[in-house]
Length: 153
Length: 425
Image (cartoon, rainbow over all chains, first blue to last red; front, side):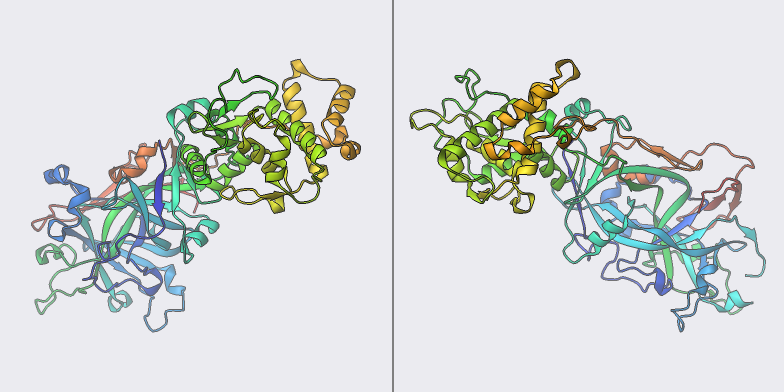
């Protein structure tokens, strides 16, 4: 098995996850990265029922075409103590909420990763097989507790 | 309530998911990757034949991440937590679906921000890097990959090495470099470590019959050394002062121009490169033109090489006084005083050392498992998004459901498992 190259940079920033029509990144500044990617860790997993169409999808090509992707709402993220006016204060990191649907809420926090994590992906449109570093992420949103019922949203 | 005042962000799940891999970086790697001219890294695993020849007791299949100078073993660590990769949403959300999350306010308008993030990938494992206590050595792989050159200079060429071809047309340095680099492709350590091993073994490229990479046997290395000392003495070359390697080569050739050289010039250069003063050693990609030897280091190398050539195993051990005498005889007259048994590193198997078992300390907690990593798995993004099978734990997972609505999504649910032995944070 010969070697596989790992390119230090993303080959085509325009075609990558950030597109020309990049929407505003609503996350707190600390969590924003050049590519827009961020990490969320969950104790447990998000179950999205797999439709029959999933098996037919070709992952490598379909992601290029926004029309073939769709989003399923899960809930809301909130950083209740975060203020855009005071971004240097990091006390807000201690509290984060994730609402699942309307009536359940998880409490978590924003944590600095002990070691930064490189997000790798197979380089598209390259000859042979190559990987590339898309982003280096230094923080994660971490929910380690289970959801509690809420009624007052 | 305070939470109602703060900004909330819609959170969605995108289908299809994308394939990503998460690689935990060491501080050195982070620095390297964020530097202005970050180098291309390599993921290397040995060829099948090499993997069988050089067995790593800790892993059957493995992938090493190589920077230009450093090697790390990649370990796939699976966690029962799931890591989702988020990015800002492009807003392809059906308004009907949003009702799952937010009901219409009194005015009939949705009380929701238009900003959203979406989960585009789920990774149930991360790749971690570690360096085993013994580090990574290229030499065991090189020993298996390089052909053994074992022709004594007093042989009359029964081995078809450097034989019939025209010795005046040696390979260019580019061809040599290509041959070396091709071979190093299959050796799962960094280029710098590969070149270090190559240099220590006095490996060389020869193109007499076909272009091939060779490692001289200890006996051949010793023969080169003896011939080189003889030539230097005859031609009055002081090995401790800078000399032209070209002059040294001329000195080892026979006066009779018809005679073929005793060994390839590339071998002489490889030996000179190995024993020359380290600070003056040019990079492997450059020819070695000038060199000088340090008599202490050189004496040690000669002693080691002599032992490896004559007494490689305990069953062929050699007496101390015999060794000392023979060792002295290999050296220039003025260096004989340097010989002492204490100069030989006794604890180390004699050169080139073979890589023994490398201990692997695993300190993973119970909630994570280390998987055998197959090289192909790295390139298969779907592997990254496959569901993990968790051992059943008590209490059973509590499943929370979101009411069904909408067109695209029939339902979404979040599993949450209580864990008593949660990952040590």
